[in-house]
Image (cartoon, rainbow, N blue to C red):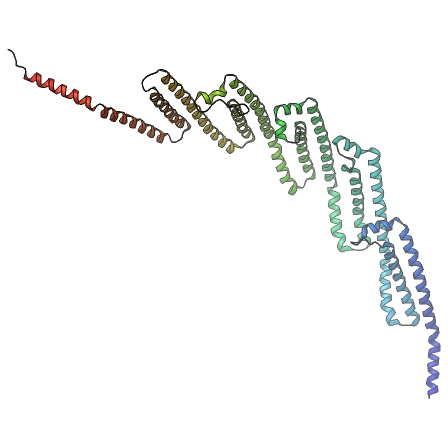
Length: 503
């Protein structure tokens, strides 16, 4: 019995050993071929430019880019799947080989799409690099970057126009190939939105191109006009004149010629930006931006007019301040404090009254120029406020002038009374001086508009008090004289009544 079982086992093993040996040899040979083929594919990928491009594209955060190694691994395992399927088929293990065969059938069906998709990807990369190289050569041959740098005064590295355009052409080429690549891979879910996006971009490219050309040309000519304006103003001596007039101190580090060149640049560039926005034809974005730029453009003439008024006013104010200071110094106005009896003549090195009046004249002219500039710019509320304040300042200045004249007249009257050698001349001079100062102070306060009714009432009360005081003083001081006079009048009346009447 045991011999029977042993015979059957020997027959089964003898029948299965060739399959087992064949499967093992097939596995070893397949494994060896997979190693060789994957090594060859990895080596070829590593020696082609594709490796560099994929490394740059797929580089991770650690900077590790084993692109050829990844391709080698994928090739190895793809071949090993086929080897394993053959191995299990030789062994007759259909339970394992059926799902693997189904997977391989799907891979076989999808393989042409994968190959075609990768072929399109490689073609897109080649065409993109050709476009990039062509654009770089065109810009290098025409020396556009250098010419732009010379015109606008930039360094060579500040105007990489050629590199920017070449990179843009490269990525646009890849983008145009993207729908075909997705279609080759049968990625329908991604294909529809990408097709829609690319279609809109292609339809919108002329608008972008037109806007870019307008903006580039406008910016280029604006920079040229800026340089021409700046150099022309430097040539005619604008910077030197601005330094003589003191404008350079107000402008800071920038010379007047550069400021005017910048103004010309902005004035020229704003309409160009508006035209470029019109060319884009994106109403949701363009309409608000265009409205803002239109408002700015409409305000430019008013702003320039206001600035011009301020500049002219500043020049006139400087000239007027110099004239007022020199004229007042020539007529001896620096002794005005001595004339009115307030202080002595100013010492050397101190600010003179003539210089102060010159500064006041300069501030007044600049204030008027500021009001007019604000009016030209359309700031009506602020203009009205400053105009009202100017009226108040004028009233205050006139009041100070009246009070100064009063001080001068009081000092003159006091000197005249003291020089008359009359009795109580000092007392009379002080009384006259105080009276004139009080009168001038009341007139000055009334001119300033500071509580006119209170001033009138106080001045009336003061005069009334002075009158009452004089009356009381006269009455008390002349009491004895009045008594004697009254006695004389009474005595004469009595004597007249006693005389007999003659018929």
